[in-house]
Length: 297
Image 1 (cartoon, rainbow, N blue to C red):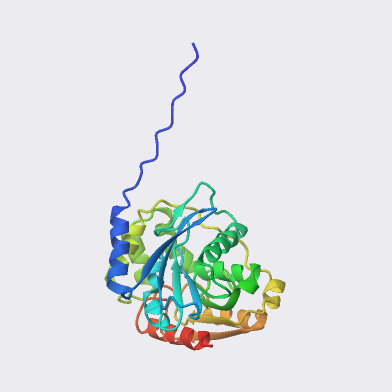
Image 2: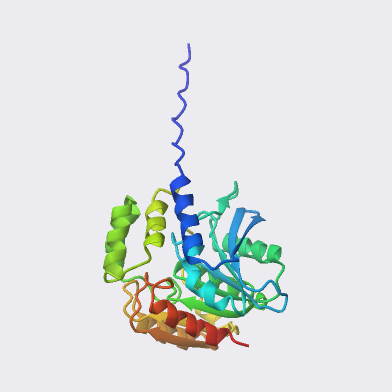
């Protein structure tokens, strides 16, 4: 008699209620009244967007992408101020912690990421947009501008990783325990090291704690954008760099960006670190002022 095959035990389904409650707490306590939520279907799942600003066709759209694990809620200071003149859309990345829900088709390549963002912008029904991102979100934004420069009016890259320089070995070494076995304690220890003990918003820290229990998905990685592609990019670009950041060498990032991007300007925020951006005062105020001046008509 043939042996009966054994079925593999099912992976336990994580309880996301604490994460969702912490997410909603940040929206309620930090985002301005009048913030709306939208769910957009895409080929890769349902994308959640938090939006604020005048719902007027004349208000220019601003799309903001968070860094890995940070969720769209991290842009609350920028939404409140830039939402005076722009319709701000902060997007949860599919497959990352947030309220976006991944579909059956996974995001595995840069082409998948740009197709996903094509779909998001198509459903928003906007013309050319201002597109911004922090860290991994900036890497996605830059790739999208290279993919569809006609759809990007202006580009804002906040301490972009993987675009113009590699990670510092010390940053990767300190991040390794958190990446191998995520936990709230390891994440807080890493953030305390990188931010030099900055007092981050308690509600956002609780959300970051809860995000460690979010189902893990492999982020899309790849080489830096090709130099010839960067030299051909004619989209006005602003780089806002963390002067005290430990992720990479900000001076090297600035030099490389100025050499490769013909329409780029760079500003270094002297007191900022990689993970105090974009949410920590006074860096948030300086960051938002720089964005506001750059995005003005």
